[in-house]
Image (cartoon, rainbow, N blue to C red; front, top):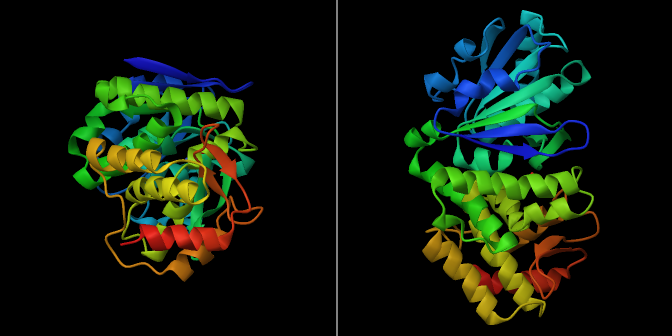
Length: 341
Ligand code: GLY
């Protein structure tokens, strides 16, 4: 079993990675908790939803939320927090988010809001959740206007990444996790695919933990974790989530390279390298398989949370990947015209 610490000043926490890691759940629960509400979804394997055996002495209730991005909504937060009220969850108790990134984002936001802040522990069951969503305390839900527009920073008290959950993960969801892993490849240059799966997940957690510890509230460096995400979020919304997050991130990474090239920040060889890593090493799509409208994508990118000073992207360049604000819309359009099939 591997244990990676997310080293935050006054609330460091552990991420336990390995086959059978769920058995460590009890170590991660606050000592004050007498009751836990497990927030989960239909389809999550029973060994990751029926968690009472791992938290002896704690009364456990379960609430299920809907499946799909449409259920990542304020209505769901109302439903979940009403279930907290129904069982008398107190601020000393704990919420357990058991599922993929959508579940842990919703459970985390419900916990952040409940009595203005109740502990949450995540049992992450998807590759994307293990390497990204469950780590670092970003929580929230979507609005019709865009993804993750309402949320809070709320760090978990611990995270379980049990590899057994990946055995039954549909191939498409595995690919989504690979999209986020490809992002870490470009951020660090690490050959992650050379590592065994548990080492690879633990390494991604370490990379993210180090960045989150340096900049928990995304005042600077954490924005690098959004590499590939500006176009990705727009693609997800424009395709009504036909493109899943990790698939869209993979495409967004290649577009970020095209845009960096358009702006003279990198050469054509580095763009080819992005395409080759995403397509050949990670076996992911590099352009959308469905028609998308450039005007709509540009409008959505203007609405992105990161766009506080005009169109904003994490872009590669001679100093490595950095956040670039106020990118000229015409250059973005030119890069999109060249990039889209
Ligand atoms: N998923 C990007 C972050 O957690 O900052």
